[in-house]
Length: 159
Image (tube, one colour):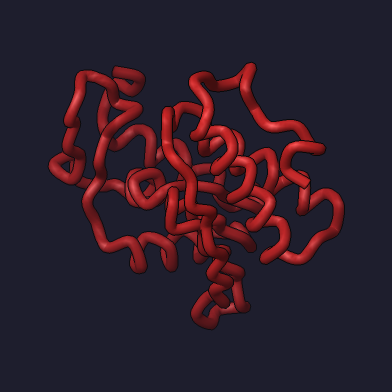
C-alpha cells in the first residue's frame, strides 16, 4: 500500500546503498531490499508493514553488502542480532549477539528501539558487539511495554 509496485522498495533502496555505511533490517526487510519478484511477498494482513518476504537471506546479505555498506545489522527479535561487516571482497565477518528473554506485550517500535541503541553505541565508538547488545536491550525493554515511541527506554533504564 506504500509503493506503486512491490519491486519499487528494493529498487529505490538499492539505488542509494553505495552512499550508505550502515544498514539495519530484519530478514524480511533485507530480502525486500533485494526483491526482484513480487511473488516473494506474502501479506498476512492488509498492511504492507507486516509483509513476509521469502528469499535466500544469506544471498541477500552478500548482495546488499556488496553494494557498498560496510555494516549490516540483522535484527532477529528474541534471537538477538547478527552484525555483518564488509571484508574487502571476502565473506562478511559475522558477530552474533544474543537477545534478552522477556515477556513480549507489543512489538511495535522494537526495530526503532534496536536502531537507537545500536547507533548510540556506534557514535560513542563502541565495538560492534557492545553496540548491538545495547540495541538488543533497547528492543527487549520496549516490547515489554504497551506502547511505541513514547515508551522507548531511557539511557538509565538500559544501563
